Length: 408
Image 1: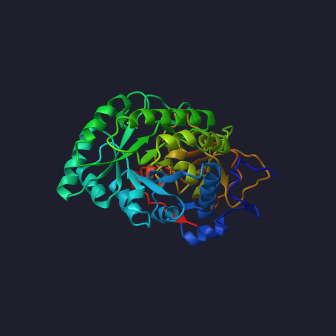
Image 2 (image 1 turned 90 degrees about the horizontal axis):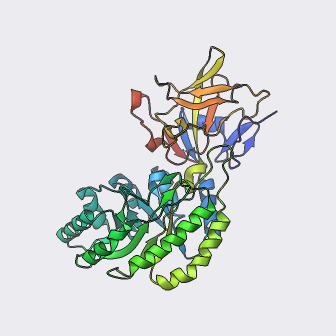
Image 3 (image 1 turned 120 degrees about the vertical axis):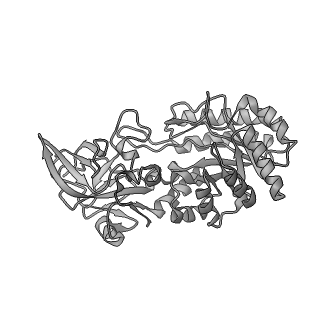
């Protein structure tokens, strides 16, 4: 007997069936009532937060980036685990404000915030991460019209990048934040405006599996923040160091050495505390908190052979899970880890490709994988699906039904 793929260790197998949230997958599918669906395991999310708490310095605050997965029930669960939220739209703002999280522990980032969004943020009392000089002036004007001094931080486009990052968010020309060399003049102007300066948001990249690269970025972030703080119109109350912690998606990828990152950050804390005595020091994470705790489940509706190749046709596809199809950030397509969830182990290594119901060759969830033992009616599971899944997908494409989401 063999396991067809390197099924991540987080989900147990009992009776040759994947167990999710304490339930066998087939029973969970009956509970949901239909496929496809996403399932997020709350115990795994809780465990991941606890692992971070144990590894990071005790005075580092942990924020959840809602854009990774804005499912309301999941965000409610997160509100009891983390110290704050970061959001990127008015829609996410509503979800965040529906939780018990205090508004002053919520920050709003993203270029191109509308006047309506800025007004809502000012009225709610959340921290706005300013992405341009114009946005600063606009927020000040809106605050005056409301009789408020909006809380504001400067999102800085640093003069360095997070090396080996899956997605570079800083360094070089970027639409995100204000170039570091322009920030001193912006801070001088901020001191003249009716804004409550809170600090800096310095985010250089995401999805990084190399501890050394994250350590270097954190050193550079503290150094840059010290230089900029000399020009600030008030004490730094918030220093968001970004995140960048990645998760492995593909065979051969290592896991991030979290203890090493935490130990290195602990070594930086004494100097950071002296430089920023009033600041909350924040690590902001999304994918690292929820990515491995989620699965996507689709049912095989047809099994067909074309010129010697077996295709498993499912009722799910790229319209629900664009990332798994390879069309969300991949340059060279690689397979996410997949498994036949109700029959994990097989007697053979027969090869099959997993496709969806859409009329496009891009609708490919697994290309030539050892899943050939699957039959019509079986449940195909895509692991590493807790982040940038449903809401990062073209759900209206070709008019197929939406996927269900549940927290178990």
